[in-house]
Amino acid sequence: MSSGSKPIEVTDVTLRYRLEKANVGTIKEAAVRTLRRQRTTEWINALDGVSFDVDRGEIFAVVGPNGAGKSTLMKIIARVLPPSTGRVIVRGQVAPMIELGSGMNPELTARENIILYGAMLGRDPKHMRERVDPIVEWAGVEDFVDVPTRAYSSGMMGRLAFSVATDIEPEVLVVDEVLSVGDKAFRAKSQTRMNQLIHGGSAVVVVSHSLEMLRNLATRAMWLDRGRVKMLGSADDVLSGYQTSG
Image 1 (cartoon, rainbow, N blue to C red):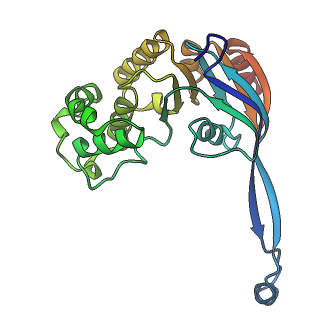
Image 2: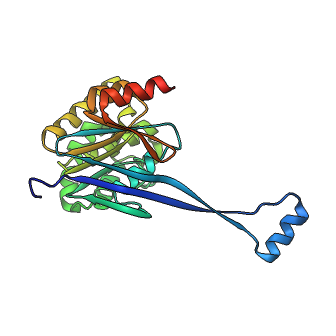
Image 3: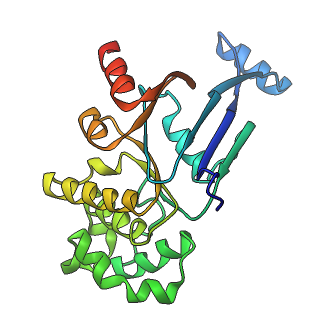
């Protein structure tokens, strides 16, 4: 990576969803429209012209009400979804912590899921086998390492997934609400690990409804509303603006 290149560059990104709706008033009309295949196509912009960048060693917070497009943006940065238009450049290895645990199989044990989840993140299975003990110890589930994860609480799954995802030093870290997982002690430990990654040079994009936590973490922030950027700037200014709007 050249010194002038930022790990994340998002330029005029739009993501459109197509909704097909049948506008009917009666059961008879519904039957006729079904037979004639008459449907109305409606396009929804989950994101609309979003632009920002994130530098190395920076935490960038994204806030907004439910349905603002935050999680959609995270999936685009994590290379899960492609944008409809615009440009997204993500340089280096990405550790996505979105919908934590969704890539794990509840019928497998924590040990097996660590290897599976690590492989999904592009890591060598042999290396993941060697990292099982420190990963489960950090997550606080070492007593349940060979228990099927269907017996885990959502908090335990979140802690385990967080521990796997942050067991490397990625260039880009994408975090969606994961820091709200667990008790106060675990949240503090998560924040400490996040700080270690930042000092190591990771670019971090984090979504959370905990404005207090974001104030302690973020340097810059963006406020999304209905897929559009409503405010972009310092974390203090954006978070204060968003808080007073509610």
